[in-house]
Image (cartoon, rainbow, N blue to C red; front, side, top):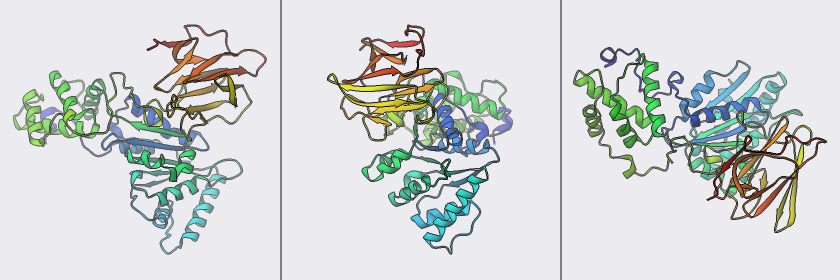
Length: 427
């Protein structure tokens, strides 16, 4: 192969999911943090979606590689199974031999195992890759497993990873109860042009380039043009281009080598192909809303724990046309506000995005954040990305008003100014 010519120690663009080569773009870092949150939180249930080749499996392998010894994992990637076969597969991952068991015995064994591990201070995690292939009946079994609990906490953490069809299933009326169990949902989009460049350099560096320029600088835009930032496609094209350079005894991949690789693969520019992946802009922020985009719920220091525990910090009143229609206590954690039933607080209005904004209560601060909604959030007629809430603040969300009332004796912060509020020009 070409390792000696390029003075590399390993093949840099193998398609196998090697954690050593993981490139943590902003999106991949956030998706990994969401996976890790299943261990932090007692009711961890996370869904990660992405197109083929977006890097889901590599993320999972990296996450598994870093887990502590007190976490017991069942990793299932064969998903075209009947409900009983799926449950048996999970038990096999936990060290059982359940194939002679009938379904009631399988369920009883699973329940007993989960409760026993939890009582012994161990965390049990179920990871299902290629989860888009799970039937609705199997997903219903997953929902039932997610409900197993002791007096203190859930006995099973769950990560479902799959292609975008998984989100379509979870959004169907038949699975609304399962969708409500999910705490965090995230969609991995393609890398930006700048991230694609960094991704290539990162893999070459891990393989032993030691900073040497192996790919001619002018070919990076062409690589992005033909791959649209999809990691697997980048690997395929770069590896083929390196083989072309090797065939010409060149230790630098040139435009001619890249053109030869494109011709060999019979690829066309990605813009002329059909692909549902949305390419993020230069900052890596996708235009998609809700839990399927990179603007999925998260706190200032990573994923925020759902609200529901601790002392009441404040209240929010939701009003429409001058009338209060609902109110909600705020406790440490997060409340997501949006149009669909899977939100913590649903406002059924066409002016509200599916997942419009979130309120995060941490320490001595209450913050409202826009989740890249269509109509945004407004305070004093100014569109905000993020705003620290003070007693009496009114935030306009679509055609509704959200008033924050501080329940503590002293206010959380002085009146917000431009040092703690990010303003977006009103469009």
